Image (tube, rainbow, N blue to C red; front, top):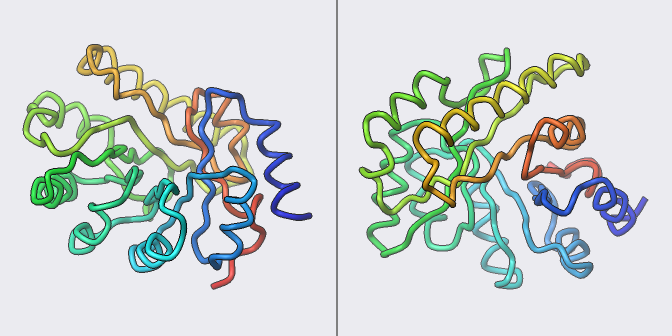
Length: 222
C-alpha cells in the first residue's frame, strides 16, 4: 500500500469535522513530502530536535504539532514555530511555555493532557487537578498560552470496551470543563484522542482530532 492510498482510505473514514494529524515522527523528509504533495499540511512529531530539523528543511506552510512528552528545558526551541502542543501535562510545563512565549510576544496553542489510561507510564493531569487549575484562575495567569482543549491516550489493550470507556471518560471531563469554566471561550473546542488502532472508536466518542502514523506511513524507521 502506498502513502497516497493509505491516506485516501483514512480520509474516507474521518468526518469533515475531525482534523487529521499525520504522525511523521521517525520518518524521513521524503516520506512526509509524499503526504504533503497530496494536500496534507498537519504533521505530528515527538522529538524536539527532529521536529525542528524538519521545520527548517520542509515547506513553511506545514503546521507542526508536538505530540510527545515535552521537557521544560526543550520548550524554547519549539515555541517560535509550533502550531499546537498536545501533551501539556503539568503546571510547571504550562508556566515554561508561557514564559518562553512571552519572550517573543507569541501566544502558543496547547492541549492539556489528561491521564485516562490504566498504565502508570502515561503522563497527564487527573480530573481533580484540572478542576483545581481552572478554579485557581489558570487561564488568567498564563496569558501567552491558549488552551484549545484536551488530549488523552487510551490504554494499549485489545479490549475495545475499555478503550471506549476511557475515551467516554475524557469526553465527559471536556464537557464538564467547558460548561463550568470555559463556556465563553470559543477556542476551547479540541479533543485530541485516537490513533491508528483506535481512531474510529475515538471519533464515535467525540474526538475532534486524531493522530495517525503507522496506518499512513507504515512501520517507523528508528
